Structure formats: structure tokens, C-alpha cells
Image 1 (cartoon, rainbow, N blue to C red):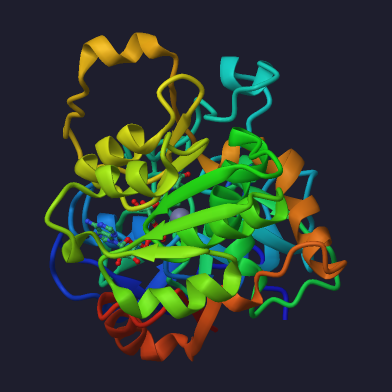
Image 2: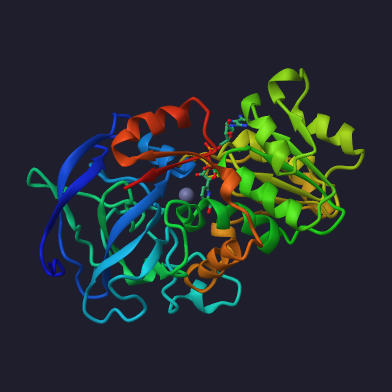
Amino acid sequence: MDTSEKILTCRAAIAWAKNSPLSIEEVQVEPPKAGEVRIKLMSSGICGSDDHVLKGEFQMNFPLIPGHEGAGIVESIGDGVCSVKPGDKVLTLIIPQCRECSSCLHPKGNFCEKQDVLPCHGSMLDGTCRFTCKGEKIYHSFLVSTFTEYTVVPEIAVVKIDDAAPMDKVCLISCGVPTGYGAAVNSAKVTPGSTCVVFGLGGVGSAIVLGCKASGASRIIGVDINEEKFPRAKALGVTDCLNPQNFKKPIQEVVMEMTGIGVDFAFEAIGNPDAMISAWDSCHKSYGVCLIVGVAPLKSKLSLEATMIISGRTMKGVCLGDYKTRDCIPQIVTDYLQNKINIDPLITHQLPFDQLHEALKLYHAGKAIRCVLLF
Ligand code: PAD
Ligand code: ZN
């Protein structure tokens, strides 16, 4: 049956307010307007950024449908859409690529001006929403919203991937994998024989470890307050695991003592300003590079010892691994299919969408690296 121009009714998870439990409701999903794509989701990861959303740590409008790490199949397209067609396997993109703004036109920029993350208005690009529930308007998150059986996204926030992609897994290549792996291989350009420290060994931190290892780092120090993360981190390539709570002194001093001179590359993948300072202070004073990947709470500030900045260290923020998303993300899927990168160890759990609450429980208990929801 052709559903393309019809309103679809399906199940979706709604956050009615910040810090309130998600409820799975029947929602209406409008057809895509010009320049938009309606997608039948096959899987969605649960990313640390979704947790920030639910806690109200982003500036967002509620009620909303959370989730952004999605893989699905195009159900229908609006007028003018030419990069995807019904039936295509696609990934949703939290950072779009419009190919027209100053970021997209610059050879290095990837933080497209059409992004709806900082701040998040929660609508499509024309300012309207495609979801309703019980007659009430429901906002989108980050232009995508993936905790739903169907979603509508702008064409610039979706990309076609290889037909052979396993849809129960590749959702991680929508956000967590390129974010972490790209921070190491593309943004930091980790060098063979180098020493790295990764703060936070969740989904993103684990992907950073994958990238450091693939780049030939000889020592990878992993820092996390949840020691249950350590065995998996070691299996991925972490050589030394540190729990800051086991030390009386600041963890950066421990890293300095372990390395003698500080690390070549430090990554923060928690979203905690204190950990960002620890990452900065762990770097070699002259040539160390500190990459901030975690999203700190709204309006939080960093306080650095200003005098020491001149010694030469670099601090760099990195979004989605510095990849121009539509140009680069399909290649990571292909690399996965060709066994050049293995994302499987990051998927510790897979649960049907209706067990979302169980999945969130696993996330909050720190049991999962990534729990994938299956539709
Ligand atoms: P996650 O919850 O899977 O991992 C966070 C890890 O940090 C967990 O293992 C925690 O135990 C650990 N942790 C928490 N507090 C501390 C602490 N004080 N010291 C040491 N370890 C701690 O989340 P994730 O890996 O999905 O995301 C991590 C961050 O990356 C989060 O802030 C998210 O918003 C951000 C992110 N950034 C981008 C980007 O493009 N920059 C993309 C996706 C996610
Ligand atoms: Zn994410």
C-alpha cells in the first residue's frame, strides 16, 4: 500500500518534560514536506547526548521525541529530494551538511549552520513539527528524533548507506562511532607510538580507543569512575585503567607520574568540565593536544590556568569526529563491511523498542556500552 502522502500512526517515546520518564505513545507522523524525508526506523542507539536531553542539559522544547543515532529505510520523500529514494538504507545525522553555509564550504568546517543542537529549537527547518500526540504538537530533537517507528528529517540530515549494511548495528555509525573514532583518526590524527588518555569509557570513549589503537598509539590510558567498563576497554586496546576515585590526588597528576612528561593526546568523552581540565592538564605542556568531545552542561564554564596556555598545548572541540557528515559517514559503513573497523564490541545489548525502559535502566546502571533498540 502506498503510504507516502498519508499521515502515519505509529509508536514513539515521548519525553513530556525534562527529568520525567519516557512514555511510549501512539503518535501521528505527517508526510515529508519539500526537502524532507520520512524514514521507517530499523534501529537506534542510546547516546550520552540523549541522556543530556532527558535531563534538560540542552536548551530544548518539550514535549519531544528523543534519540538521534538512527538507522532506517526511506518510506517517502518530499518534493525536490534527490539524494535518497524510497527503499534506501539510511542513517540519520545529528549534524547535517547543507553544503552551502560557511562551515560546509570551508575545507575543515563540519558544524553546519543548519544544525539544531546548540540551541535545539526542536522543529524542522521551516519552523514547524511533523509529530502530534493526542492532538498536541510534539517537538523533534536535533532535526532527527529516532525513538519512534517513523520519523521525518530534512534531506541534509540523512545519508544513504551501503545496501549490505546490517541495520541492527550500523545505527552506531550515525553518531557514536564517527564521533569517537573520528576524534582520534581524523581530528587529533593520533600518531604511531604515541601516548593517549581517554576520559570516559562509554560508547564514544570506546570508539576513541578504537581510533587510537588503529592509529598505532602504543599506550592508551583509560579513565572512568565505573570500573565495570575496564575489562571491555582493555579488550579494545586500553593499556592502563584508572578510577579517579581510587586516588587522593587529582587524576592528571597520576597521568603525569605514569608518563613522566604528559600525554601526546588527551580526549574528554564525558561532558564534565572538571574532567576537561584534567584532560588538558594531562597533556604534554608543549605539544600535547586535548580534544573535547563530551558535551558540557549548558552555560558551564572552563577555568584554565591562563599563564600556562603559552607553553604550546592545543585544546580543540570536536563534533562528529570533524567529519563532513554526508560526505564521510557512508564510507565508515563501507569500512565496517570490509572489516577495516569493527564496531561490534561496542554493542553490548540489543532490545526491542518496547523494552526502552529496560534499555535506559542498563544505560543508567552503567552496564551497557551501547544498547541498540530494534524496531
Ligand atoms: P556514556 O554515558 O556512554 O559514557 C560516559 C562515560 O563517562 C561512562 O562510562 C561514565 O561512567 C563515565 N563518567 C561519568 N562521569 C565521570 C567522571 N567524573 N570521571 C570519569 N568518568 C566518568 O556517554 P557517551 O559515550 O555516549 O557520550 C559521552 C559524551 O560525548 C557525552 O557528553 C555526549 O553528549 C558526548 C557526545 N559528543 C558528540 C560530539 O560530536 N562532540 C557526539 C556524541 C556524544
Ligand atoms: Zn550522539
